[in-house]
Image 1 (cartoon, rainbow, N blue to C red):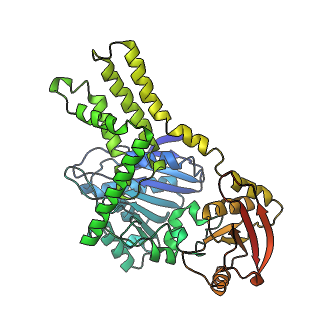
Image 2 (image 1 turned 45 degrees about the vertical axis):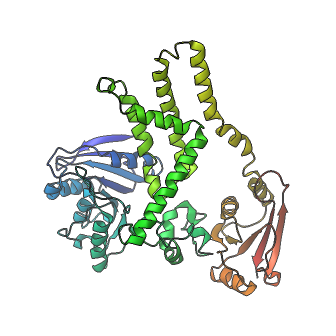
Length: 467
């Protein structure tokens, strides 16, 4: 439940989870012109998603009296008033100009840390208020100012973050993880270094924790900018091209008519002047179809990220059918039914076989979990030779901590054992066949589990205890 209150400064605040012992104060961006404050769509989205997930946190969205960077003192006064209202340990989350506002009021006694989302950290902004606090920055490499659209470049916020570091302020700066030198997912590269935080089964529960693992930073998570060099820029262009191909292929899987539908929709978006109003829904649909996957093109595109596009594509089909039914050729109801049926079946063609083919997916993993009942792995530290996905599920249901799987190197038996010992692993999971890197004289064979083939997934698991 949320409510709106007026702050002592005259600004407004929207509150949720008011009884929680800790607070998150959301401070949004602004503009050059001095305009009345509005509720931020960015803050509203964050609050809507996070409020039900974190009942232990109070959320406060601030609506400035004036949202302009030419009156930062006024915005900061509104932020301080929000902190005075909640009067409890608080994290400041500042988006764009809100980053400068957050840093400017960080000296408030209730502030514990600042999280900047593409934050504006101008040179003239004093950072002394951050002493003794954390500053963490999340910024996309391609964020920047565009004509008529306020924005902050990654290079700009990086300079501000480096100024903070020079003052001894702790924190992290995050950019895209698909730079020219990045390798595959960190969990596949770092061996048994993926120490989960207290209360978590594995580091995958919060992938941001990989940024705290030195070996993950070294192999896969090096900060970079596509504008830092010609090589980096070419890498980004190749990445966009590859992701664009993947996206178009997935759309064609959604419906074999997807390409034709998109071409027709694009052509109809260039109507005669007298038809512009009639085609406005189509223009909006095509614009949404183009904008939604655009962010993934810069980083990584995959079918599961594009499911919302399937529904947009279905909506586009409906709009095109509405326009088509108004033509003389489709005046015959039988032709209308036939065309609608063919298009509808094209959208069923992909999900139905996949649903039938994946109905047994994960069945074997659940059988391993059942077979391990009675095996005391609770609070034990476990690692595996492969299949971190199945291993994490087993660890979760066994109440264990999962530290990772073998990296893509050839271990000697001595190397493997030393790595497991260094990570203080209690149990080692071996899926399928025992590899030559396992010296059984160094392990106790605790349990062998075999499940029938034909249900998808692994069929054999051996649990070894380190001696």
